[in-house]
Length: 81
Image (cartoon, rainbow, N blue to C red; front, side, top):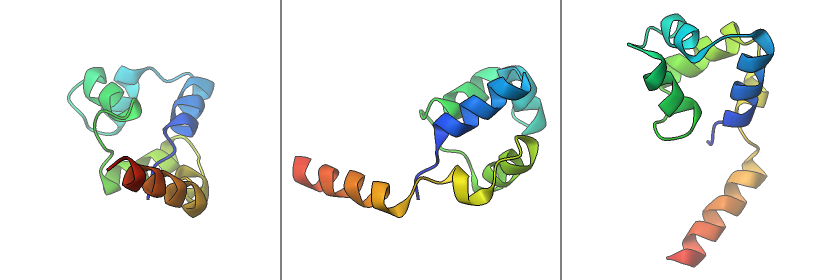
């Protein structure tokens, strides 16, 4: 499954949380570590995703991109190879 990073960023900004505050809430060392996850450079761990849904009040079904989108992305990746 692919995590919807856009909704995470949108909800974080909507609630007024800084990256440092989110890092603290997720028990990460600093805002840079959170930033790398939110920007897709590192993947959120499963327990972090669960915490995000509660902190940002995002329904679980909205935190993941749809299967149709995932299939499209996988198909495109196969064509590139």
